[in-house]
Length: 572
Image 1 (cartoon, one colour):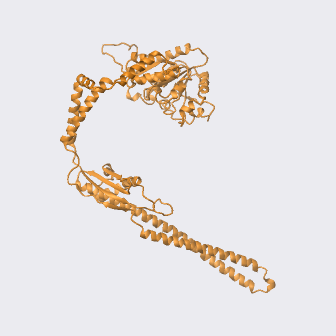
Image 2: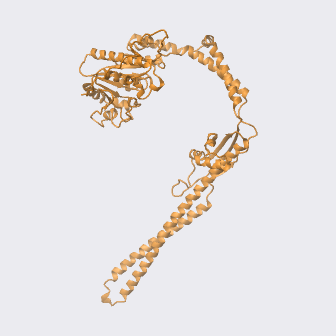
Image 3: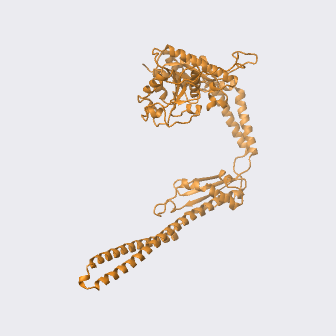
């Protein structure tokens, strides 16, 4: 098979290549300006006027700056050795809430200091140990006071931390010295006692001195222990003297290199210059918007266009939901008893899609077991997961046993739609060999079960291509009438191609408001090269237009009774 499956794809690619390969000429820009003069003239006026009004309404601000020099500090160092400061970390310390609160209290501002941090900028000079502080305020003296306040508070805090470090180290050494001195004193008393016992044995008659060797051995061991503890005591006393000298002679951990002084003039650019710049920017934006509007509107807006590019029929058009129904369980409109006219049309679209899928399951050569259908899209956020979930619910409501597979292991959405959360076991654990049995989750919909994605793996594509996917799908096929697989986007990762090759057919969701024709063609080409059976496309988020006098497609929506749910069945 060549790069393109058929001459139609080759012609379409040549058409897109010729369009995208054209270089914009001056005539193209002039044509765009002529066709949309209101846009080109309105944007400069709006930009210029808006910039001038914003500049006139602004409050004059004054900037002040200062700098700090950082020195080595024992805090966080190993064995009390001085550590070189990390400028990035110290800049965060300067902008900490503790330092800001202390500055606000010293200046008597009556706040917690969070407002000061909004206008404070701290940067470190590369290749040096210098921090630069700047503050923008409404008063020149206030700006200088804030910069100096942060410099002094940070310097004092860093010095206090160093003093506390040495004090704590000296206290620990003194505590250890006290214990060792007590041990040495105890050993001295023990040696004296053993020495007296030895002398007492020597005073006896020679025939009664059998215990003398043992007494000599014990006395020698006691003297050796005393010598060892005295050595340790000497070493620790030297360490204490060294640490005390280090604390007394250490250099400053932070010093103020340059104090801030009040600014003589406000900062910023004049209102007139800003207005002129805004108008020029608006002119460029107007010309660019007109040109882009003229040439680059490649959205796949109509079903005829989508069908021509996709090379497959459009199986349904789903109108755009309200914003409240785009995410979470509210997006499962097949489970909603109430809704707007758009919701009713969307539900009918999913029912028609269900019918198409049922007919497709009858036309396949191998009629044993359930029908495997993958749902994908060209790019993320085009509605594939919502479509897969509602299609699965529609099939279950028709009395079919359905398994909904959350195969988008990078960004699982099925779990969010059904409110079940990310599971510890799922498709990823089965493909990774962690489990051999499938843990299907029951739902509130009769005959509908979910195989969750499981924990996010580091290599989803490799897991899907490992050869373990087909046995999993075969097992699901044997226990369900339909298996709906939610896959990642085609043009984002290769997962959809691997999954599409293992199922009976693939549905491609097209966002009427976002999907471009070149992207749609590329997605179709990727699926064709992989030999995937594309059942058809689903035009999602279409703009439903209804006239006031028109009442088409509204029959029985207003007062129709909801269908009675059939009894629950248990999936085999």
